[in-house]
Amino acid sequence: MENQAPPSLLETLPQELLTDILARVAESSVRDLAPCLLVAPIITSAVNDDHVIKNLNLRRQARNPLRTFFRYQKLMKKSLKSDHPAAHYVEGIKQFFIYDNRHKGLLHLKKASEGSYDNATYLYGILKLCMGRIEEGKAVLATLGWETDKRRTNEAWNEVKKSMRVVFVIKKPEYLASLRNNQPPLSCHKNDKDNICASCFHYKMMRKFIGFVSQ
Image (cartoon, rainbow, N blue to C red; front, side, top):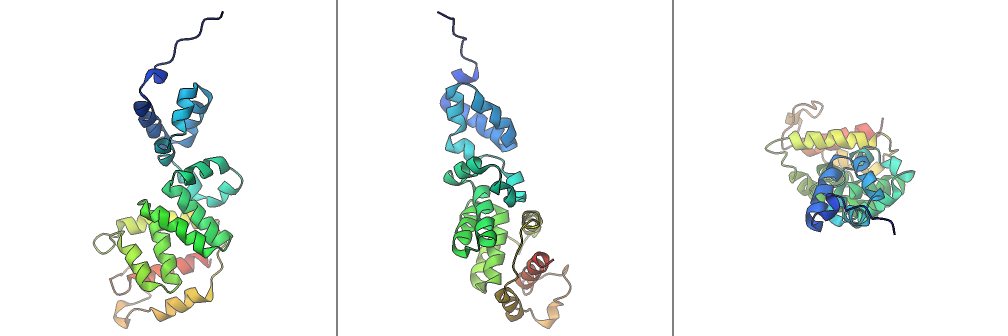
């Protein structure tokens, strides 16, 4: 009878501690986590724990949602099942813009936003504004705290641009109608994109988004 190799240090750890360690690895890189699937069953089981999946670093997928049509299908499926905010963000973009399923797309973006994923909050709020649901959109964007500090809003917009640069968007008439119907007062200098106040913030955010997707 062959001698079995003694368990590794990782295998002897309590499951809760092992899961926490793997969750930290997942935060760094999906690639770093992959080798763990090839080792002892107890470690493989921990990798599939919801806590680990929710901590996966999905930045690459979020920056190019179309990539997930050809790769990462199993990963994204697991991540959606575990309610990973970035996975809902990616799926929201695909459903809303690629499949033209607004209802499903907005549901996924809402879930991502509820998971404190700023990129999704920004896109969800902007889409509400563009669709004419002004008060809903304002309420969503307010959660980014733009009235006191626009840093989170600006960072989210920069990330949304990266996500949307590979997505073909049809500029629908209602977007332009919403923009026309919600112009700020003349005193706001609507063409000055760097001078933003509470009266023109939402108009200028809509205008930036519509201008970007129209390029």
